[in-house]
Image (cartoon, rainbow, N blue to C red; front, side, top):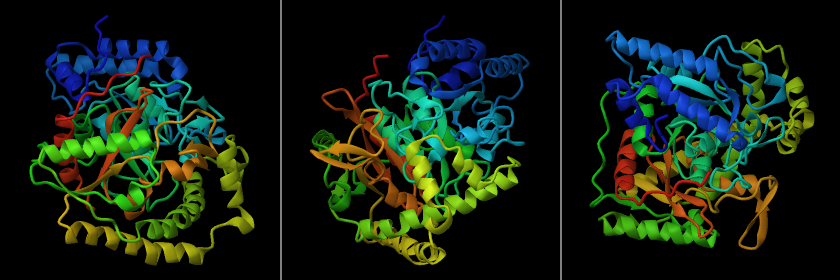
Length: 470
């Protein structure tokens, strides 16, 4: 069997279209890896037979000389909160274990229409409400770089599958960091687009004003490929010119209380970019922490109740929100959602203030920051710390202190989520223990293609990441 280890999604599509190898042979290689590395627990549902039928169809289509899609024969994985008609969409929770939506989510349909082969649905933090992918219903997903540690979350299954070489790329979802955090902890690339760039329906929701699907892959070029399909974008994206490019470095908030090795790697990356001609503008984003705190949980904890109720009702699950919550298996998720029932619900006036006042203020703060400093993007460590052991769902150790796991890991990714602007995490190296570290680039709202162009240029000159030793 041909060894396709490490092949990028772009190279795979090129080879498949050229006939250098068949879709079925490529799929068989990946399925063998899925079986060999099943202990990673990256998948909730692995659809070997369905994927094989799709791969054979792709090969037959090429043999007829028909026009081939942008993702012809490319095996992909979807996070298991993205609706698929022929596979269950569990949301990582027991009550939806056998749910079969009537239609594919638009983002899933776009990938399939472009010729992708769906290999399976990946594990996730239950109902996407967490950052470890330690799922009590379907088991913990393991980080391929360190199997005793978390891959991040909530899209941890997709992250583990991509870096483990089980698929070349996949789709996650991101509310407060759930694509970028696992990308950072798994040493891959994760992209959160501007809210609304991709269709948001057909996804088990947390917050309709914050949720978005996001591609995850080993290279920025692969992200660009998937973004083109998901956004319906024509044409390619060329790398930006780094010389003279102005990037903001907000030392306040984003660089505070970092794990020492994360800080060292981040400073090394900044120095590398400076040597390439990037202009680093050290200026803070005013009141970003205060505005984010006043926006984040009021919006998410109010909308998760209303949005999940609507999803359950419109999807024909036959479940109420209360019945769903009653069956939640993961203690952290159960405790949080149970607290929102009855008198514990987020008050609507608090939600309205966050949505109508503090969120617009946060968005205006970002607009002013980019505009007044003439910045193309802002750069900072994706997470303040590298991966931590499985089971530390409530607290983790950072610089000798016990800190909350969830809010610590999303500290740097959450503000741009609430502002609705695009962000992308890139790997920048590993700690002395071989654990990946990521750096994030955020851009102005709607400037997704410019951000991807910057990321292409940054990646092109970066040292290659060492692969995990599976």
